[in-house]
Image (cartoon, helix red, strand yellow):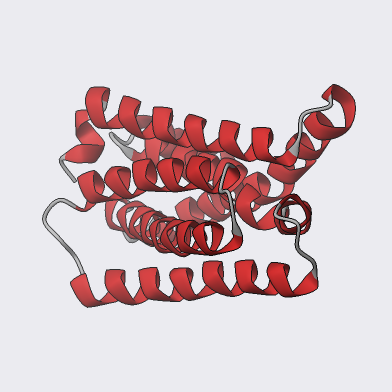
Length: 196
């Protein structure tokens, strides 16, 4: 059954990039939340600063979910998803080098919007491409990729900081740049997603 799911995902046009994109989103995009405590210290703040950062991201995520729900199924959902991914990359990179707390909070708010938007639209596209008899199996693989990215991402990022002396700002900025590059690549070379 599991092999049949992977076989279907590999052969269905547009499905494999969406599954890989879901892993990329959580692997790279969730680092802004994983490293809130060290970022708060980098901004010369404490628990109050961390609370402001966390709330800014949370409010942005709720806003992004409401925006996607209000828009509903759009004609260019695949293209919009990739645009949101590129915005996430830009805001994540900007947040990494924010000079003060208000700028960091503003960028986290925008990152929260774009993260939730790209995540929800990507989930919707996967469900739309999966036929009724395969949807449950496809969503199982999709959830595996999402949870895998959430678990492995902070582990890899933490090891880069510990073993190679990279600061939290550099790791977060690197994740942002990679998100932007993935979005640009898919937007330019994967017409299947942009046409969804």
